[in-house]
Length: 92
Image 1 (cartoon, rainbow, N blue to C red):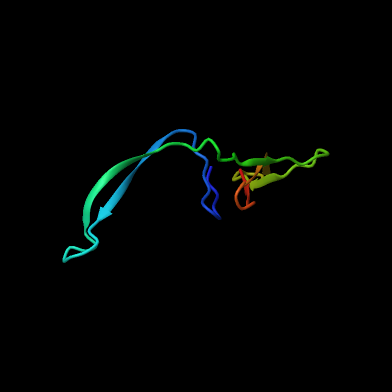
Image 2 (tube, rainbow, N blue to C red):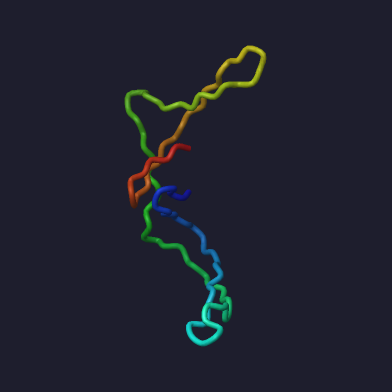
């Protein structure tokens, strides 16, 4: 899960990224010199997204219109999560 506001992301597994190294001076300044693979290990200190629970049987629901002959709506439960960095609420 990734926060849409601040970009915070908790990863459980290691992943690789390409690190681009460019020339810093001379007539080739700004051109790509080489591309290295960099392995990023997960942070054990990062917090998970916190799930928000509402007491007293109050629930958030997502209501969608079904495309069928009677135009009935369907209801599905919504789970709310809060970003530990910025506090942004995300519905899932």
